[in-house]
Image (cartoon, rainbow, N blue to C red; front, side, top):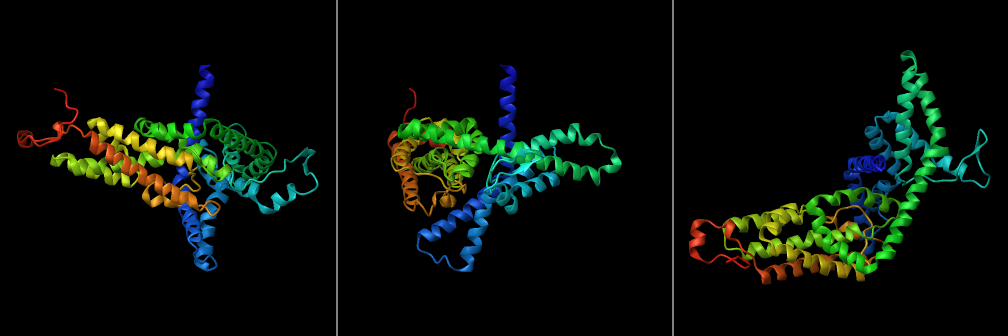
Length: 379
């Protein structure tokens, strides 16, 4: 059991490291794609060259996923990046796709080549690069040094291209499809109640850092399904409830120190960084944490009942509205914005009503005034 556990830990660690390496690119492309969808939903002119070019830029974020995975995976596994990129181009080459997916079955040395398409896929190049790293370690590094600049790269490219189209790339597609089906099954199983629970508890996951484990899942799901139905919607409440909490604390606090800290934490939450609010406000003052969870719960009810989904990996901050833009589901963005407003308002009101004890933030002069908030203070 320990060996299996260690293997799983290594697999998830590798996938997380590979995904995080390309997240900025994915967010950038997702933002552009989402803004283009938003422009179209608002009735903007989609025939001009500006829209057409930017729309293509957003599209390559998903289309070119095998290339990005080849780069990141080769770095992670220590495989030759140039060969890895060559293999990524090879398995996504339009002529190859047309050939192997034609009416007649294609065989290579008598072995059937699976009918597959690999553009926009997540796993094929991860597995291919891992096998490539093993081949380089146990086969090609044993070749004479004199051959390393000519014959060895050619032999490696030939061998790995065959392995890719016959074994590793099809296996990667099978894994991707299985995960996508599993996500759909889980979503249908947990239903609205499960979404509400996830939304409510998301700030607690963030406080432990466990939310980072879901980054690979989010990208895999968006790559395979084109939509993510659990984590992104849950993040709405986690982000915007902290804005409501910090705004209420900043306005209601009587101590200068707490006012400043709440305002700074609120600005951070506005820009998707919620840890300052969690650790500096919620956990210190206790009652605002209850308010934040209430905001998350209220948001969760809305997103669950209105089926708010993420269509792009543009982020959950106010700058990431493109996350929720979809040509096929124009109402989705409106419902996402409503969920944000609900989170802020509910968290603000509950924080204001419950109050908080700011004694530890007060100076001696402020304590002597007797005008500071002490709600919940133990006698």
